[in-house]
Image 1 (cartoon, rainbow, N blue to C red):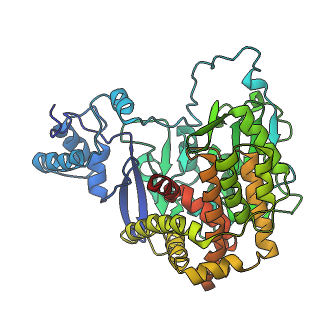
Image 2 (cartoon, rainbow, N blue to C red; image 1 turned 120 degrees about the vertical axis):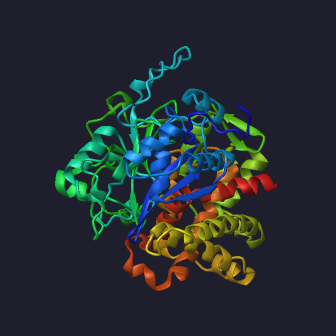
Image 3 (cartoon, helix red, strand yellow; image 1 turned 90 degrees about the horizontal axis):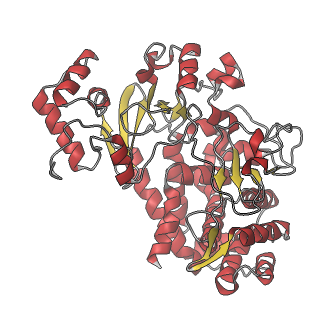
Length: 496
């Protein structure tokens, strides 16, 4: 097969996510190429044609299968459609395994089909990972307000087959999905049958979310009626070689509204003590053996874990963002030494010139995504609005005098409390360790805090109307991770 010839039995590639959205009364499917960020909008008839392309049918067979679903097309038109998708790099090869290997994309392990690789070889004397203790973020419990902020901001909400069937049985009226799985769900990746499905979104909200923001599955079937991901959110799990750190993702207004409030729901059932006690379907990330501390500098996992504990015990400064920026500079100059933490506790003031390239890069990402969203997302869509707010805030902060004034303003007590908790949760859950070197991740987090400080002035009068606006840090965190804006930090790193 030549590069210009579509596969004989086409299907959507594993690196392409198809997501059904209902905007007002209009239904559309958005294809998202996760490798390039490209978006392609399809109508319902085109999606029926594409969804019939599961890698087992030739184009004639696809046309026949689509016709059975009421989507009629001529073979030449279908061939042209698939040729266009192929030219855009959206089709997979005839063999699913081959495509996944070449694209570097694999289907995510889901609650229904947990990944079951062979147990990793243990180093001499290393403890069985299943025996590692669960170390839960102390002094925190969650008060959920039941208003659905987290159910309106993410691009994908996963269900395994049993969860999807239960949801359709409880709410058969939602998108008429009671007897037709494909009416309410699309595959997690590509178009061939896979273990996880993604629920459709209505104006950016989970289709099962009621008008007032309450989960209708929870209302009708109790908390167990929700998919595992929703039941465990916003709890995170990461194995650092010593313990499994159980922390919280600061991506929902309820998390920050719970700070300092006792009597909420625990992040984890207190009866669970070791990793082996966890439901095997829960995704437990693992810290790598070595981590990047600064560009070109690495440290062992044990060294990073010990340093993280020392930083968590340090006295945070009044301006956490300034502390993070100073700490980043100290790491690049000195590495993981005790003296670097002193720079965090007694930081230099934030330099507007040092922040400027970071803010410009984030603005570029947010503005581009806002333009794309405006072409198809509803004006009521929280993801669209939050992305536009971040674009507006970063544009405003491009004005040197305005940025300088914001940085010189004392951090209000409530904001400071939220910022300190955000850092504490990130440190406990090792959420600063990832694709970026640690020093760049610290600067990234500082920039997010600065943007969150500016966000209320942009949101203006909308805050009281939407509970998601009450906690700007959570809104920034969720939008950056949930919609790919966090890649701005890599843009800065690549630029030098």
